[in-house]
Length: 76
Image (tube, rainbow, N blue to C red):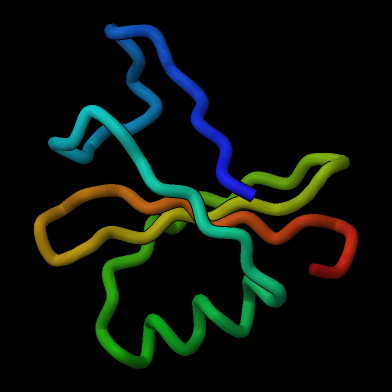
């Protein structure tokens, strides 16, 4: 499934990314993936958010673009 969700032009949600958009990936095990990415030297945002529909974390690509990782509560 692909979802396109626009944000207001003045959103700060993508900060500090220089990009006006963000890709979001669904993941099966957020903690395991973050540990693996960290061991590979990927820049990881220390912030985490938990909701009744899943957990979120953010990483950055080499150009500084923010990427959102989402672990739904239900298995993929």
